[in-house]
Image (cartoon, rainbow over all chains, first blue to last red; front, side):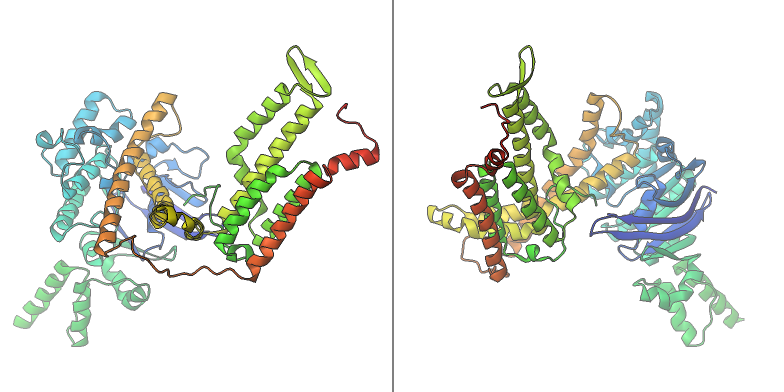
Length: 285
Length: 284
């Protein structure tokens, strides 16, 4: 098991009039190879949760164990933790700062004190992995390239640290449909080639259910569901009460079932087509 | 969200919070001036009690008001030390070579510390009990006479309120950027001085970039809604002074009267007490 979280609670601004409990008794585990999605309304505690996993917020209550690093200890090895867990923030392109793309991507590896040779190698790999042409982009300023490229460069900056777990906070926010598709395909590619465990926060349920194998629902700081997408959507009414939507494919399935057409598990378009063809073929025979 | 000690609005909805910001600003200014007229320990005690009274009715935790002194603690210690060691007149208490400590020196240093800390705490109350918008609104009213010398009062007010409005936003942004760079292994709290200075670059550059982006967006938004500061604008919230403000003025005026009586009429309450008890502390 790569990540174990037990009874995690956190309150912002303790002892001030602005105090707000962001997480209440959250427990779950992430296994190696998982593709996990986290959804929840704005302010449900998603970002606070993932920042805990990377040791960016000091643990207050509960237990977190990432690989062999126990975060409830007094002085956990944060450097090692950040080498193992790569974190891509919302709008990661806003964190670019160096003169050239190459130097910016090298920032993480340099902080990890990799050797020069290693840095050069991993920077090149990372830039190519995110689908950019290394030779033509490496000397450009990160402020003069396009928005989509910026986001790729920022993701490359995290990939270059060779993390075992990749956490992404709304990686497709603010992109056009084509850009979204490309970034999602990129994440899938990264999952297969470098970081084998991926945790992704998202807003768009259609988008998430197409990729992730498991969904965690947070509401008001509490973990309400932890299930595979097709099973989760059976709680459609409860989800809608929390301000969350179900995918269009699942809605279609419900509409058909009202008309008497019963389908198997449907979480996304592909499932729907598969189930539909099954019925179609049965009818034909 | 992190707490910044000096000037964080602390909402409790108390009477002090609901005072007219113009009145609060004027009273705070008056307080800042009048505190320089305090000459005796007895009146310092009276001022301190007055402050305590204001803090209690405003329901701000006493501790956070005390904390506001932390920002000037270096200044306090520095002036106190200077005064103690270099004040040469009066009754000598101790002497090592060129360093002479006199009773008057200590007296002066203690009063300086009292004065500065009461000053800072007093002005922090204004910040604790009024929102930035209230303060700029109040300032705009109070600066209104400057319009006659063609001073762009409204523009200055809008610039001020935008600047104040964006402080928390930029703080939040800074937090996010720091987190993002930390996640990439940046260490801000260790290493040599030069390394630490270098560590600021990955924060400052993205922060500047986003400030410029925000400024541009805001300017465009103002333009698209035809914002123009020059014609006579009406306001959404009219400030109104009421009986609460009248009472506040009377209380502060009473404090001022006591301070001035002490200085000019009774010539220090301390002296009166010393004379009554027959002490001779100053070697006169």
